[in-house]
Image (tube, rainbow, N blue to C red):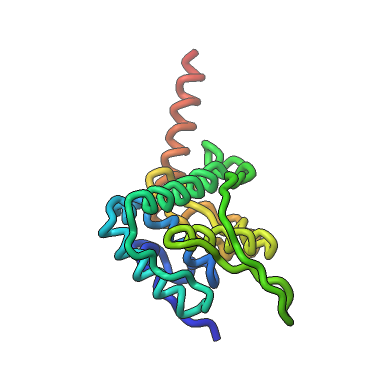
Length: 211
């Protein structure tokens, strides 16, 4: 039975059923530290205090399901916070590129940026295993990239998405059978975007008919 984990950043607005499995849930939580949603949630990586608080809570949740969870960086300095924020923003931008300007159009391919980290490898009865390496934030960054690599090989990376509503952009895990979800919440985000797109099409047709 899978242990239920409450991810602190995602819990600010995300449905529990949309949480990513295992260590990928921590990656989703990192993505959801950004300022987003409606009402707008604060950026949890904006200051050292809020970042340390989030890391402590999120890594504690991760340790419940993964014994290889990195330790909380202590102390967290401005340089480490900047590297963590840069990683989050690069990943969010890469996931957002998968959305077309018009959500009714097919999504484009997601290109994850090249990010260098170090990792250790061990060989055992279960085969080769990657383990995070580095001190402080570098260990956290290493863990995130290992989880993304594992998700890529397991073909679950494509299910980690950000909401197609630019006013939301919340990260969610698409559990639909055909992996076709566009919205973090179809009720709050999907309907709003569909109405906006419909009005834009009507306006365009109106302008065209008068020309």
